[in-house]
Image (cartoon, rainbow, N blue to C red; front, side):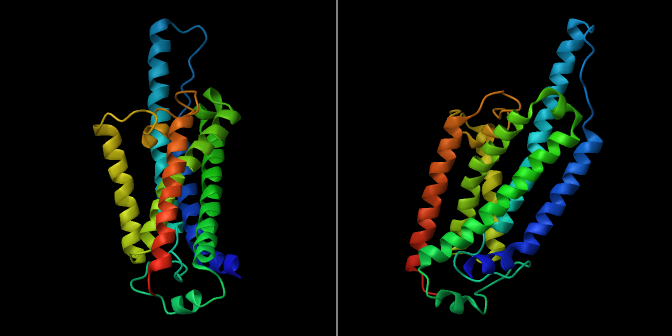
Length: 247
Protein backbone atom coordinates (compact mmCIF):
# COMPACT_ATOMS: atom_id res chain seq x y z
CA UNK A 1 0.00 0.00 0.00
CA UNK A 2 2.84 2.40 0.79
CA UNK A 3 4.34 1.88 -2.66
CA UNK A 4 0.98 2.54 -4.31
CA UNK A 5 0.49 5.63 -2.14
CA UNK A 6 3.89 6.94 -3.22
CA UNK A 7 2.99 6.33 -6.86
CA UNK A 8 -0.29 8.26 -6.51
CA UNK A 9 1.61 11.20 -5.03
CA UNK A 10 4.22 11.31 -7.78
CA UNK A 11 2.60 10.11 -11.01
CA UNK A 12 1.61 13.57 -12.28
CA UNK A 13 4.93 15.05 -11.19
CA UNK A 14 6.74 12.29 -13.07
CA UNK A 15 4.62 12.93 -16.17
CA UNK A 16 5.41 16.65 -15.98
CA UNK A 17 9.17 16.03 -15.65
CA UNK A 18 9.13 13.55 -18.54
CA UNK A 19 7.29 16.11 -20.66
CA UNK A 20 9.81 18.83 -19.86
CA UNK A 21 12.66 16.42 -20.58
CA UNK A 22 11.16 15.53 -23.95
CA UNK A 23 10.84 19.24 -24.74
CA UNK A 24 14.50 19.86 -23.86
CA UNK A 25 15.52 16.89 -25.99
CA UNK A 26 13.63 18.33 -28.95
CA UNK A 27 15.49 21.61 -28.49
CA UNK A 28 18.76 19.72 -28.31
CA UNK A 29 17.93 18.00 -31.59
CA UNK A 30 17.23 21.33 -33.32
CA UNK A 31 20.23 23.22 -31.93
CA UNK A 32 23.14 20.78 -31.84
CA UNK A 33 24.39 19.93 -35.31
CA UNK A 34 26.95 17.37 -36.32
CA UNK A 35 30.44 18.84 -36.50
CA UNK A 36 32.47 15.81 -37.56
CA UNK A 37 35.38 16.97 -39.77
CA UNK A 38 36.38 15.46 -43.06
CA UNK A 39 39.25 12.93 -42.91
CA UNK A 40 41.17 15.19 -45.30
CA UNK A 41 40.75 18.35 -43.24
CA UNK A 42 43.85 20.27 -42.20
CA UNK A 43 45.26 20.48 -38.69
CA UNK A 44 43.71 23.89 -38.06
CA UNK A 45 40.29 22.66 -39.12
CA UNK A 46 40.64 19.54 -36.96
CA UNK A 47 41.66 21.62 -33.95
CA UNK A 48 38.81 24.09 -34.43
CA UNK A 49 36.31 21.27 -34.89
CA UNK A 50 37.53 19.49 -31.76
CA UNK A 51 37.12 22.68 -29.77
CA UNK A 52 33.63 23.20 -31.20
CA UNK A 53 32.67 19.64 -30.27
CA UNK A 54 33.91 20.18 -26.71
CA UNK A 55 31.79 23.33 -26.42
CA UNK A 56 28.73 21.51 -27.75
CA UNK A 57 29.26 18.56 -25.42
CA UNK A 58 29.67 20.99 -22.53
CA UNK A 59 26.42 22.70 -23.42
CA UNK A 60 24.70 19.30 -23.59
CA UNK A 61 25.88 18.35 -20.10
CA UNK A 62 24.83 21.76 -18.79
CA UNK A 63 21.38 21.43 -20.37
CA UNK A 64 20.94 17.95 -18.92
CA UNK A 65 21.52 19.32 -15.43
CA UNK A 66 18.11 21.03 -15.67
CA UNK A 67 16.04 17.80 -15.70
CA UNK A 68 18.32 16.41 -12.98
CA UNK A 69 17.52 19.35 -10.69
CA UNK A 70 13.84 19.10 -11.61
CA UNK A 71 13.54 15.44 -10.60
CA UNK A 72 15.27 16.11 -7.29
CA UNK A 73 13.07 19.12 -6.57
CA UNK A 74 9.76 17.53 -7.60
CA UNK A 75 10.07 13.81 -6.81
CA UNK A 76 11.90 13.73 -3.46
CA UNK A 77 8.63 13.82 -1.55
CA UNK A 78 7.55 15.34 1.74
CA UNK A 79 9.31 13.11 4.23
CA UNK A 80 6.73 10.79 5.80
CA UNK A 81 3.88 13.29 5.42
CA UNK A 82 1.26 12.94 2.72
CA UNK A 83 1.96 15.05 -0.36
CA UNK A 84 -0.51 16.41 -2.95
CA UNK A 85 -0.15 14.75 -6.34
CA UNK A 86 1.05 17.82 -8.22
CA UNK A 87 0.72 21.25 -6.64
CA UNK A 88 3.12 22.51 -3.99
CA UNK A 89 1.51 22.58 -0.56
CA UNK A 90 1.92 24.69 2.54
CA UNK A 91 1.46 23.32 6.02
CA UNK A 92 0.55 19.75 6.96
CA UNK A 93 -1.63 17.86 4.48
CA UNK A 94 -4.96 16.70 5.84
CA UNK A 95 -4.16 12.98 5.69
CA UNK A 96 -0.63 13.23 7.12
CA UNK A 97 -1.83 12.15 10.57
CA UNK A 98 -3.41 9.09 8.98
CA UNK A 99 -0.11 8.31 7.25
CA UNK A 100 1.81 8.59 10.51
CA UNK A 101 -0.72 6.31 12.26
CA UNK A 102 -0.23 3.47 9.79
CA UNK A 103 1.23 0.24 11.26
CA UNK A 104 4.66 0.95 9.79
CA UNK A 105 7.80 2.43 11.30
CA UNK A 106 8.86 5.91 10.32
CA UNK A 107 11.98 4.36 8.81
CA UNK A 108 9.79 2.31 6.46
CA UNK A 109 7.54 5.27 5.63
CA UNK A 110 10.53 7.44 4.74
CA UNK A 111 12.40 4.69 2.89
CA UNK A 112 9.46 3.67 0.70
CA UNK A 113 8.54 7.24 -0.24
CA UNK A 114 12.16 8.21 -0.96
CA UNK A 115 12.75 5.02 -2.96
CA UNK A 116 9.67 5.59 -5.14
CA UNK A 117 10.90 9.06 -6.09
CA UNK A 118 14.47 7.83 -6.59
CA UNK A 119 13.38 5.04 -8.95
CA UNK A 120 11.32 7.54 -10.92
CA UNK A 121 14.34 9.84 -11.04
CA UNK A 122 16.42 6.99 -12.47
CA UNK A 123 13.77 6.48 -15.14
CA UNK A 124 13.97 10.14 -16.14
CA UNK A 125 17.78 10.07 -16.26
CA UNK A 126 17.82 6.92 -18.41
CA UNK A 127 15.23 8.50 -20.72
CA UNK A 128 17.30 11.69 -20.87
CA UNK A 129 20.58 9.96 -21.71
CA UNK A 130 19.02 7.55 -24.20
CA UNK A 131 17.17 10.35 -25.94
CA UNK A 132 20.29 12.52 -26.04
CA UNK A 133 22.33 9.79 -27.70
CA UNK A 134 19.72 9.06 -30.35
CA UNK A 135 18.74 12.68 -31.06
CA UNK A 136 22.13 14.39 -30.96
CA UNK A 137 24.19 13.73 -34.12
CA UNK A 138 27.39 14.66 -32.27
CA UNK A 139 26.82 12.36 -29.31
CA UNK A 140 25.95 9.39 -31.50
CA UNK A 141 29.14 10.00 -33.51
CA UNK A 142 31.81 10.74 -30.90
CA UNK A 143 30.50 8.65 -28.00
CA UNK A 144 29.54 5.01 -27.58
CA UNK A 145 26.50 3.50 -25.86
CA UNK A 146 28.86 2.34 -23.10
CA UNK A 147 30.03 5.92 -22.51
CA UNK A 148 26.43 7.11 -22.32
CA UNK A 149 25.64 4.31 -19.85
CA UNK A 150 28.59 5.44 -17.74
CA UNK A 151 27.36 9.02 -17.98
CA UNK A 152 23.88 7.93 -16.85
CA UNK A 153 25.45 6.11 -13.88
CA UNK A 154 27.40 9.27 -13.04
CA UNK A 155 24.22 11.38 -13.16
CA UNK A 156 22.40 8.89 -10.94
CA UNK A 157 25.19 8.71 -8.36
CA UNK A 158 25.85 12.44 -8.22
CA UNK A 159 22.18 13.34 -8.48
CA UNK A 160 21.42 11.08 -5.50
CA UNK A 161 23.29 13.56 -3.30
CA UNK A 162 20.98 16.42 -4.32
CA UNK A 163 17.97 14.10 -4.16
CA UNK A 164 18.69 13.02 -0.58
CA UNK A 165 19.33 16.64 0.38
CA UNK A 166 15.83 17.39 -0.90
CA UNK A 167 14.53 14.46 1.16
CA UNK A 168 16.18 16.00 4.22
CA UNK A 169 14.69 19.44 3.50
CA UNK A 170 11.27 17.82 3.14
CA UNK A 171 11.33 16.67 6.75
CA UNK A 172 11.17 20.20 8.17
CA UNK A 173 10.13 22.52 5.30
CA UNK A 174 6.85 22.98 3.47
CA UNK A 175 6.72 21.48 0.01
CA UNK A 176 7.13 24.80 -1.81
CA UNK A 177 10.09 25.85 0.33
CA UNK A 178 11.69 22.43 -0.13
CA UNK A 179 11.46 22.89 -3.89
CA UNK A 180 13.08 26.31 -3.75
CA UNK A 181 15.67 25.08 -1.25
CA UNK A 182 16.67 22.24 -3.56
CA UNK A 183 17.12 24.58 -6.51
CA UNK A 184 19.08 27.08 -4.41
CA UNK A 185 21.31 24.26 -3.15
CA UNK A 186 21.98 23.19 -6.75
CA UNK A 187 22.87 26.79 -7.63
CA UNK A 188 25.19 27.03 -4.62
CA UNK A 189 26.92 23.79 -5.66
CA UNK A 190 27.46 25.17 -9.16
CA UNK A 191 28.84 28.47 -7.81
CA UNK A 192 31.23 26.74 -5.39
CA UNK A 193 32.46 24.39 -8.10
CA UNK A 194 33.29 27.28 -10.44
CA UNK A 195 34.68 29.73 -7.87
CA UNK A 196 36.54 27.47 -5.45
CA UNK A 197 39.46 25.17 -6.16
CA UNK A 198 37.79 21.94 -5.18
CA UNK A 199 39.68 18.66 -5.60
CA UNK A 200 38.33 16.55 -8.43
CA UNK A 201 37.57 13.80 -5.92
CA UNK A 202 34.81 15.88 -4.30
CA UNK A 203 33.73 18.14 -7.17
CA UNK A 204 30.37 16.60 -8.02
CA UNK A 205 29.42 19.37 -10.46
CA UNK A 206 32.51 18.83 -12.60
CA UNK A 207 31.93 15.07 -12.43
CA UNK A 208 28.73 15.53 -14.44
CA UNK A 209 30.28 18.28 -16.58
CA UNK A 210 33.84 18.55 -17.81
CA UNK A 211 34.88 15.45 -15.90
CA UNK A 212 32.02 13.28 -17.17
CA UNK A 213 32.62 10.13 -19.24
CA UNK A 214 31.39 11.75 -22.47
CA UNK A 215 33.92 14.62 -22.23
CA UNK A 216 36.84 13.37 -20.12
CA UNK A 217 36.40 9.76 -21.34
CA UNK A 218 36.90 8.46 -17.82
CA UNK A 219 34.51 7.58 -15.03
CA UNK A 220 34.81 9.93 -11.99
CA UNK A 221 34.65 7.12 -9.45
CA UNK A 222 35.94 9.19 -6.52
CA UNK A 223 33.40 11.99 -7.02
CA UNK A 224 30.64 9.42 -7.43
CA UNK A 225 31.65 7.67 -4.21
CA UNK A 226 31.77 11.03 -2.40
CA UNK A 227 28.27 11.86 -3.66
CA UNK A 228 26.89 8.49 -2.54
CA UNK A 229 28.41 8.92 0.94
CA UNK A 230 26.89 12.39 1.26
CA UNK A 231 23.54 11.05 0.04
CA UNK A 232 23.62 8.38 2.76
CA UNK A 233 24.47 11.03 5.36
CA UNK A 234 21.58 13.26 4.23
CA UNK A 235 19.16 10.32 4.34
CA UNK A 236 20.34 9.33 7.83
CA UNK A 237 19.84 12.93 9.00
CA UNK A 238 16.34 12.91 7.44
CA UNK A 239 15.55 9.70 9.32
CA UNK A 240 16.61 11.26 12.63
CA UNK A 241 14.37 14.26 11.95
CA UNK A 242 11.25 12.22 11.15
CA UNK A 243 11.81 9.95 14.15
CA UNK A 244 11.97 12.90 16.53
CA UNK A 245 9.40 15.23 14.95
CA UNK A 246 5.81 15.52 16.19
CA UNK A 247 3.23 15.70 13.38
